[in-house]
Length: 102
Image (tube, rainbow, N blue to C red; front, side, top):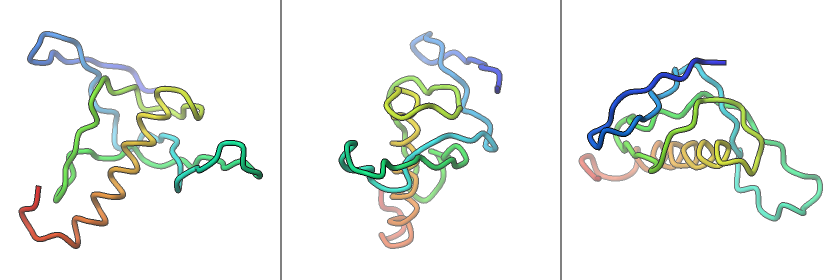
């Protein structure tokens, strides 16, 4: 398991350093839909999404959990599921919208 390092933020709070790019996290491949549907969807594992990648960087608010394979429903899983979905969306639209769009 990767070690957790911290850095000081502007407000003096401690924030987790972004996980290494080769760290795997679990996320949904697609919208999971109804959790009671059968057969239940199984998360996939992907590399930690690069939130600062161009052309459409983004930032998920709140503390960044240590990169890990979290179980669905946990706060760590939800964080990385959102970050992965945002990265896929930014990568898709980044090729379509005019350069310089923010």
